[in-house]
Length: 103
Image (cartoon, rainbow, N blue to C red):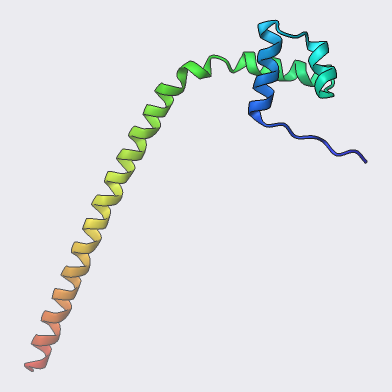
């Protein structure tokens, strides 16, 4: 039973960039790295299909950062409300026990 090798995204990008830049042919890279041609072809197709996301990452990142900031504000507000509720509960409990002791 053969083990499947795993490759880092950085390695895949490097190999695909070598093919796209014309530095080496796909066949040369397949021989050099002991890859099946279909594997390299799949990497290249995936790379090309997802190339547009490289330029959209700033927009998506800023949306995610805005969402994180919104959630942090919400957590802060809820924490403050919880503290106020706890203190109010303690005051009510204290007042109730004082009035009960006068009876």
